[in-house]
Length: 388
Ligand SMILES: [Zn+2]
Image 1 (cartoon, rainbow, N blue to C red):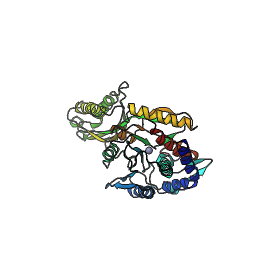
Image 2 (cartoon, rainbow, N blue to C red):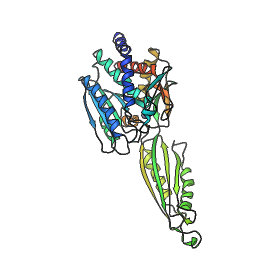
Image 3 (spheres, rainbow, N blue to C red):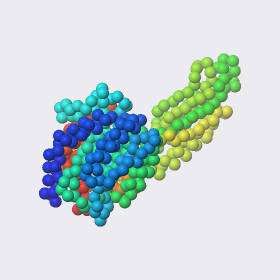
Image 4 (cartoon, rainbow, N blue to C red):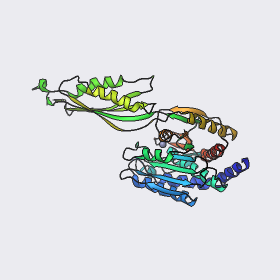
């Protein structure tokens, strides 16, 4: 097998230039939030590459969101398959590629989505090509690439699609943004965005303030209540990040609303804290006001299951054996689609993509050498699965 692994590694090294040019090509396609057309162009490009490797592929399309690409390779179903997971959309608004085209300087690549997460997908595709080149057929391989992760799948049922497609698989590698300190993500908090809206009674602040019912005063009390719900022990935090209300200082405000960001560790806690927020909503401080609580969108947490821990050990071994450094198991607050493969019962590790920093900012960069290293790491991990 070592020989096979070396051959696959050699394949990666022989295709370094091709990998970088594909990276450049897909970064330049853009595809930020709400750019369905650009995202779907990226999906078509990846689909073609996988089809050329003999994949059976299809897209799940949505009216107001980027498509999900699903591709399956390999006919040997004797063992549970391997999933490469990721997303094709970026968090960067339209027009960014004109301002900041893909460039390489001092061993770092720059451009919108270069790190988050087009580099990781290129690494995964070349890991697959390399595995195919050595005749790998021990397990089926599935590629699952979402097209609307950065908008939390607000206009699609992508999480359901991912869970359905992942069910029954043996391991998933999410080629999300890799960390320069070699942290491999084994757990992520979930996020929920909730709106609380108060309707009061408008009145002239000078002529009849006594007939007004201030929506702002009501929500002021509720902001304090919401912030007070934070439970460090349970790992649930509340952040009132946006407040809006009123029209002019001369009127008792009729409307006020807040947007709350909730982070949580346990997928089952969603209904628990929504009930708590409903409780705050139902309590009235200023008589004559009414409050509604609306779940806007969100992503479930990635739970650190025993399967996740076991898969991390496989990654750690592969990492160390091949001289890539020494990784550690990392827990982060930001959500990803790894939540859904884990919910489907599939051991998953996240942040397996190219390494870099400054995600979601104009300074976003990725280390070019990590493109090849991560492709090799993925190869080594997949080959190692057959030992366990
Ligand atoms: Zn991402």
